[in-house]
Length: 178
Image 1 (cartoon, rainbow, N blue to C red):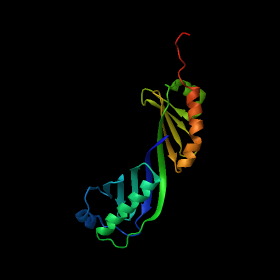
Image 2: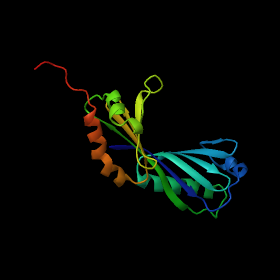
Image 3: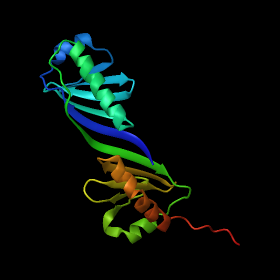
Image 4: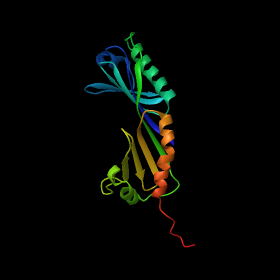
């Protein structure tokens, strides 16, 4: 299972004026209610609100989340806000993907887990299985599975066997004569 995206939020512990920031920062876009700041190493995109709240995404590890939060905080601090502190860094969502070595029959998935599955092939190519809480498992016919809604990497790795067991129930059987 590969981590494809981690979304996190934190607070800069001060009010941030976009008017002052736009003159000092590079790699930014000013939107109506927030500023989009992109950093290259680690590669991340942050939305900075004037209240000091920051929403960050595009990272692949918890270590990179901490590094990127510090880099964003440091950039804002260097732009003229010396009171910046990173507070309440929280992982909001971790998205994973995995590729199974076989194709899947999504119609079978809908038959087996009817009340938990949303599958409309004319609208979207994946079958979405609603797990507990905010967890979502999106199975594709090609054998790819996208998993979202986790806040802890270890919790997702613990559910890996369950994800694969469901996929094995709906895999295409070989139709070659023996």
